[in-house]
Length: 88
Image 1 (cartoon, rainbow, N blue to C red):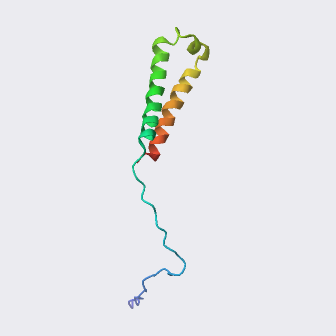
Image 2 (tube, rainbow, N blue to C red):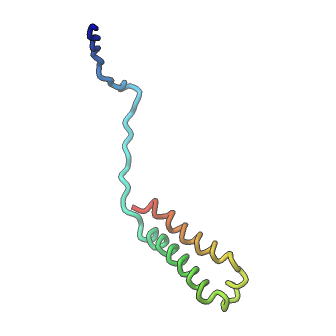
Image 3 (cartoon, one colour):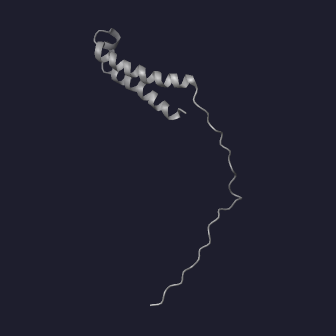
């Protein structure tokens, strides 16, 4: 059986007239206030849950909230964790 011919392919070069270079501004480190709020939310959420477990039945407004205390604590912690995605 005869051997097939190998075709040479030319290297693809993208057209230069369709793309304009965009300069990206370098992002600096996060502000100190941003880090304080981020870590503060995580710690406050954790402390909310700890206080709920230890003394939740002795604090009147926490007793009124009932199981909503878990949602409050987890929402605070998750808000702090979501802020870590923008932390530089």
